[in-house]
Length: 109
Image 1: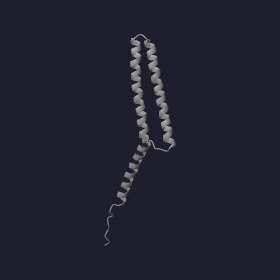
Image 2: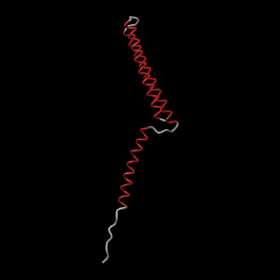
Image 3: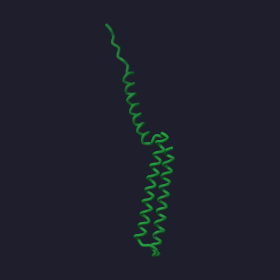
Image 4: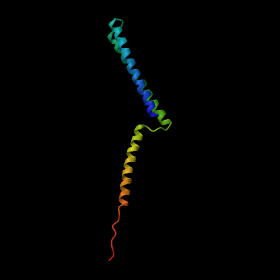
């Protein structure tokens, strides 16, 4: 489920990047035609980028709220648990090997 949300997030970021490029091209055309100044064009582009970054942050926050609300584990949490499990399995295997070692029988004379 988390992967699906991340794909949506990345798709949104990709769309924002495409939109930014298109806006830059159009604003540059306006500058070339003399319909706006360089400083105004830069302000429009900077405002758009700032707004896009803000909305991306808001979306990430909402995403994390949903993950927590429904009790889904984050990929980082799952990775940490896997590492801990591997360590415990290794320790358990060593303990099992040590206890299963054959005992040397001593002969009574």
